[in-house]
Amino acid sequence: MKIKWLGHSSFVLTESTGLSVLTDPYDPDMVGYAAEPQSADVVTVSHGHGDHNFLKSVREYKSVFDKPGKFEYEGIHITGVQTFHDDSEGEKRGKNIIYKFGMDGVNICHMGDIGEPCSPELIERLLPVNVLLIPVGGNYTIDAETAKEYVDKLMPDIVIPMHYKIKHCELDIDKVEPFARLFDDENVEEDVDELELDRTDFDESSVTRLVVMNKR
Image 1 (tube, rainbow, N blue to C red):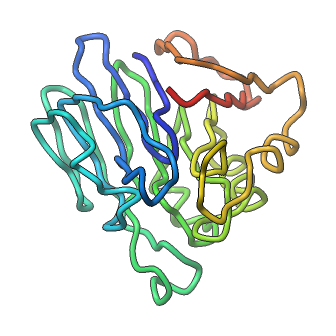
Image 2: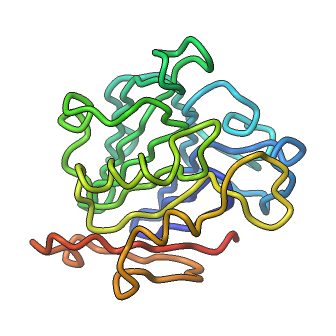
């Protein structure tokens, strides 16, 4: 399978069969930059804010998932887990859906705009995770330190940061560097255009690899 980052919290996940999932499409007027228009079989929406549910930016799609539950689309297994967008049980910013995807034998977890602190109960619901897509910019979501706590508890093989400030971003969020500094240099890979993975890429190693992707 392949993973491509479109910016903000939006990724395209493509299975070896050619089926694709697009996560959290965003309104460029809200974020400050645009993504190249994409088509996908499935679109997932973590919550109802314009920088995560802007379906107008998707050229073509067949199904949209925007609620918790267990779903399947032509062999792609999708689980939506209800969480909170803040640390006050939704009083500030409402709810958030974490999505887990089973694609080509790889477990991918997209944390959406998670804002609640890490808890043993939530970790148990999310395990196992091979690839973790997690916000690190703070303010509207968890910050770098809390994101690292999730990483340490979930122990993914690969973690890909999202929802952080890049060039032209107009949101009041941090850059990726505070999060990247929490990892040993030898476990950090930067400027990755596209990540191609197979279930055989994962072993019993306890070391998590940080992959910082380029916006495409």
